[in-house]
Image (cartoon, rainbow over all chains, first blue to last red):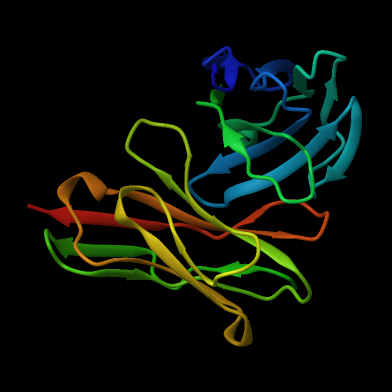
Length: 113
Length: 112
């Protein structure tokens, strides 16, 4: 089985712009979660989508949004980028059942200048 | 606040030394527990998991972890580390149907 893929792998954006990141889960996985990883804050949960519905949401401002498509692929959008949004954004997929484990993608490295 | 604590931020060991990384959580009720590893330049990989049953779980590459419910702990162990174990290790807790919460990570450096 192919693993979780994320595109693009690297992005450089300017403050105030918006960005869209994409995640393709492992085939058959219905849940996709997004995390932000920074040296200072570590791994922080952004949101989880399951069957096209947001199931859980972390403590991030409304500038961070996401969606999931019928094929379970997910996108994450950040509007009005700030310097502090520079981070590695990780996507993880799982079957979505009660006892599940998440499989992580390689991440998208976003740099905001 | 509910959290996951990893007590050791940076551990330096020589090859063949034994390893124990601490993890404590503050969630009540049923939880699922995980250890993930991030090797330099690679993505997060699952080392081992605990859902229920035997509190001593074995994972890949000779790692094991013990769930002690009374202590809210899930410590990671390996009897003899290798240079290739150099990585960052993350404990994670899944409480109920809520989000997976990670500890701050422990950077392990194994010296040959």
